[in-house]
Length: 372
Image (cartoon, rainbow, N blue to C red; front, side, top):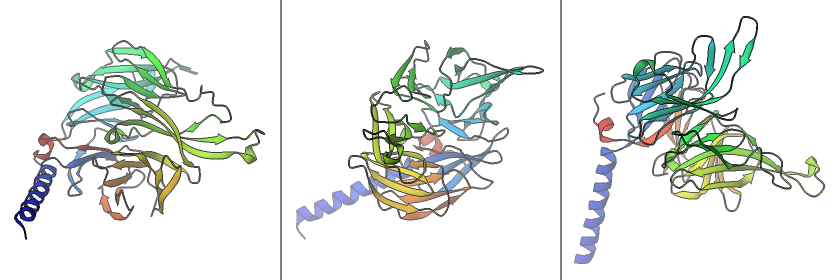
């Protein structure tokens, strides 16, 4: 063996060791909620549960948003009516708010995000005044809370927004994107709102209105605010029996604000969530009863497998090498992202996850070093 070969081998081994040490120091983690009132902090390097935190009440719907430092998990729970902030290092309850007040009942449909500086928490209020003999529907509001407001937090600012808002997400520049009849941005300091992706109001000749279902704010690991749609494309006759049907996505790149609307595959199976593979902008994955890998540019399925059961919520490791399927029951299925080969299951103590959002992130040292 030549000296150059020996040096190359030593350098390669050294880089591999450094990489494994770095990953050991900062492994990927997942935070996810399941019934009756559990929040689990999962070390994805070992695929084991570091700790299970007890929530103050009913976990549903279990929408989770992480603080930018990844040390606080905010959970929309209490039957869509409460938000709790949990320190994932020790399970301390650091933030709490009841969205309702008196006879004003407020629900939030999976609307939860944290400001890019971690100082504020955002949600969307859908209020109803409950009277003796009728309900009065009130205006929808974007509500801002201080993250350090403690256990009886109240909104410090509210702004009017369109009805039917569900998932929301904060971009790197501080704008918050809202999923509703269209995709909107709102400036949380001023309440200025703009339409960034026309959806219901889009005028695409030859296409139907898009049909959208989304209550899972995923996409942070792939730098995107993402929601899927199904759509019909008609020929000159406009005959529905002759239409072609497609899956598509509406996307905002969180680091740049760039938007994209793309049909990526024929509509062949029902899917609930989908997102791009980190580092692979031409690869899109979707899940429900099948796990599907798509080539966006060619609008073709690269690979598809049937699943053992239904999973609602898809997510990736931060490097895009693994897939995590969550939601419905109480186990998280782990797959190789390239081959779709199943690698195992992470079983959660407790009941089903239902529509809980799984959030994956690279762990800060404060979490990796926290006592279990």
